[in-house]
Amino acid sequence: IQGNGGDWIELVVTQDHLDIRGWQVRWAEFDNEANGSDIWYGNGSVEQGILEFSQNAVWSNLRAGTIITIVEEQYIYVDTTYGDNRTYNVVPGNAEAVIDLSTDLSFNPDADDWWINVSTLDESDEAEPLITSIHNVSLHQVWDWGCGNDNWQGHVYDPVSQTIVFGPVGENVSQWGGSGINSNEVGRLEENPSSESGPLGFDDAKDSSLGMPNEWGTPVNVQDFALLRAWYNPPQDCDEAIAMGYVLPHDFNQNCYVDLVESMTTGRAGGMRKAPKRGHYS
Image (cartoon, rainbow, N blue to C red):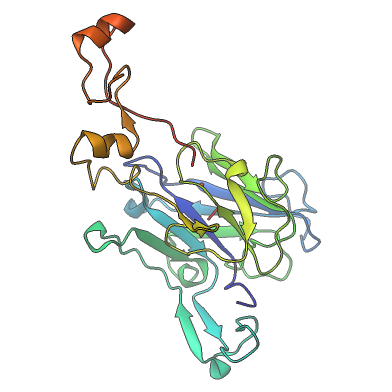
């Protein structure tokens, strides 16, 4: 779609019962619209900003496998007869379809709803926004942050521990898995999301599945969330546990038990662990 639906970031929770209250998404983009303020990057001539999660309880106990999207707009107005569809500068009166991106905190795995969405425009009028935005982009309103195609990068930061808990990722980060991103593309994770995800797993792409597992390639690959969501759908038998990536250390015959012979062979018995898998931007 021309205009690409505005700016948005998609995150996946890879640790169960995660508390992200106060965490920040710090971003920077290397074009020429900065007003000179240095928010975090160290150079006020670089566009930069921070999206900060509030202290609201909704962020205090996130379940593994949850998808969180942060979007700018509240409604996307679509002209379906303009070329390949148009969303950029379409006024409401000329829209033939409307995409509702208002904040939606519904989360119901029983109904296969794993998606939490927050619109910074929708939140901007709230007394206690779920996510606040600050940036140094000239002539942009506070909710109108940037996730563009001019050497954008971002990371997730915990101010309490003063650590980067994910990233950085972006098209100007070393080891970025793709090439440059244009105004009709996204940075897309093309592997199963996990705590091991890094910039090499990303590629530039023409499409992405907002709020759902990513798809890529021919034949089509689809991200597998089974391991992250095993707290909700536990394996029913040994074969399914192994297929989901759960492995007992030293279980050489893969029967989900470590017997005396196997223990004596290694000198110790093992406990259940998750097999490491590589697998996070959309």
